[in-house]
Image (cartoon, rainbow, N blue to C red; front, side, top):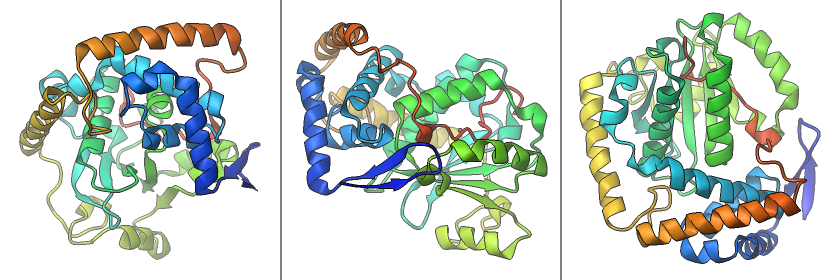
Length: 327
């Protein structure tokens, strides 16, 4: 095992494949019977993401994964359908692009200035819907995605502390290691000042994923050229594709996605994220009971692992496209 210094106070560990497998096996053991009842949600690929998010600390990864299992069993994100969140989507504040980056990663477009609702609950529900469907559509081998954040029309009134906090909580605790690249497109000077304050607290691997791009800067525009096909990229991001967000077309597209989601659920899948067969309600109810029981035991025995533990790599809070005035 080797290590390298991050931009934060922690040291980022670098493990060999064999060392990673040892860590995965340790988490499986800590998970206990839950791992057998939910073999896909507790797959090696899933465990690996949580280990990376917690810098290979097996107890913290175990705690984090169990909390996600509880959340998924209660929140049922895979059962959110378009009709539930259609109003949130009308302005195109978050949507999945109909193109990928050059690595085949799903692209989520975010426009913080296009916020159209006031309900925090509804905004977070729509964010979760977008994440689930972005992962469902992903063809990349590593499961990472790209965020294109358009700052056109953005100002400080677009910030909402509560929604930003809730957004960060969902993304950092339940969708770890999903961000492959975040492009902040034409952010105003006032945001740059905010970024200077946040930057020292970021892990190096997160910092390296965030890129500032300005349409009038040839050097930063090269980032777009390196990552996207200009013929596919929207003109609002410097591409040649004049077709932007169209609510009616997107509605049809998402309803087709809902059918795919229903197919996975009817086949016994608990989540499109893992795309594999699980047994249905009895298994989930039993696992939920086990999660509650084991988590309760751990809270009394492992006080050093707080429920809301934040890893430095999760602290990137780009202006959320779900903020009340607007990840």
